[in-house]
Length: 522
Ligand SMILES: *[C@@H]1O[C@H](CO)[C@@H](O)[C@H](O)[C@H]1NC(C)=O
Ligand SMILES: *[C@@H]1O[C@H](CO)[C@@H](O)[C@H](O)[C@H]1NC(C)=O
Ligand SMILES: *[C@@H]1O[C@H](CO)[C@@H](O)[C@H](O)[C@H]1NC(C)=O
Image 1: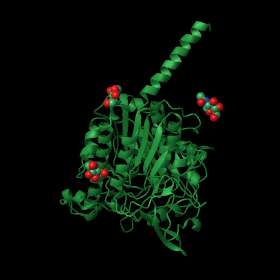
Image 2 (image 1 turned 180 degrees about the vertical axis):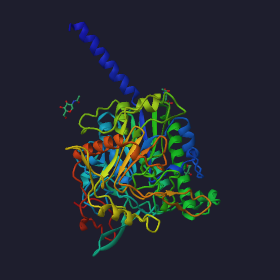
Image 3 (image 1 turned 120 degrees about the horizontal axis):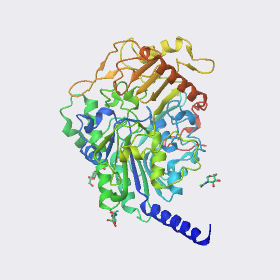
Image 4 (image 1 turned 45 degrees about the horizontal axis):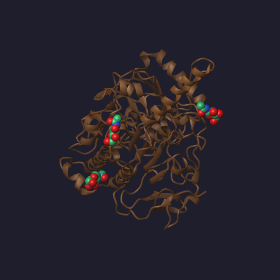
């Protein structure tokens, strides 16, 4: 290259760097907790969500969008862009006294964005481990954090009760922090309002010379069912008390989203902001949630556990007012957001997520055709599944005691079909082992929450065409043995590269004492 060519190249390099810097969008990500498929207005719920309906109507609703069936795993995949089997976290959630967190050599989304020039802030629920300070949000890429570290707590006094050991009994203690400091001043403030206030403060104080990444992981609408009475008043027509109060919790959350988006508009940030709303997993019918007409619920690999409510909105979307039917997964946010931010994913371990921006914004085909829902050889359902002889415990036991039945697919392709697993390929979904509570929970509006019964017993290998049969009512493995074999081979492939499961026993040193707060103890 001669001098002139070098100059031309340099000019274009500088120009594109400046261009990216000027265009880096603000990213505001609101994650709802345990918000079910049938709990949002735009899915026909009896619960009113005018802000979610309006914002999503002006953006893109994700209609074929998947999350993990539980809190820790969904958040883990959001932060790392990687499947649970690759972080050793395929089993359950992190309980308060378990000494582990997402492996410290995983690079988190906020670290990527901070290195890409962003200010990074988090409000709300962490639930990605906290036994050591290194595990806290402020050590994993967030410049500020206001929220709680465990998976659930009281909405007003911000206390979490948890069993230390059978001998030490149950400890109730505060779980609320501002940065790494215990935050004692907020007793009595309803968390949906408290976290919204902090989120809007961050937006108002944001200096527009840098792009903003704000992650708002609301406590709403996870159990316990707690809500100020005025949010419940419009729902006197719902006879079922848990559902009625849950509806009030959803209204408070909807108002929170309205307040956050309005603050973005009032501050002038909105015109360069991408606003993402997602649930972390399906609803829990025992705590007022509903996934009807989808099968199952939180903690299961049925669609009710993993098919998530989500939308993306803001002026950056090229085809607003659309619904995408493209396959999208929570692990896709990391590469998608990093791509929009012009931030490098260099330094991450191999990603399972895809950049799905063209599918969301431009109506293109998703690069994702396959989705591993999970493989968890230790799966157990800790919440009883209704129905006498259909109880979860009974079903799980009968699956386990049938020993390990292996399907042989040739010398090196064997997958133990008694293992809890599910995989999606295009329209096909294969489930093995016991997927979790298999019932359809009828809509509770007007009456008590009831469940419909199973028309046929579960099988160890089940295949559904989700496009034609989103409710998973017609099991068709016998009609498509070649697809069953293909998907079992894929499961075998994934299992062969899975990390060993990390699920340590409780460490009694977690006990914060009667006046302490949950937090790092090592
Ligand atoms: C939304 O903002 C209004 C007005 O400031 C406030 O009264 C309300 O409590 C806020 N709602 C939430 C959920 O924070
Ligand atoms: C966005 O809003 C700000 C503040 O109102 C304004 O200065 C800026 O020009 C706007 N940008 C675009 C792309 O409209
Ligand atoms: C990517 O990371 C590696 C190792 O950390 C480093 O050597 C390399 O320079 C980085 N590349 C870019 C483009 O940042």
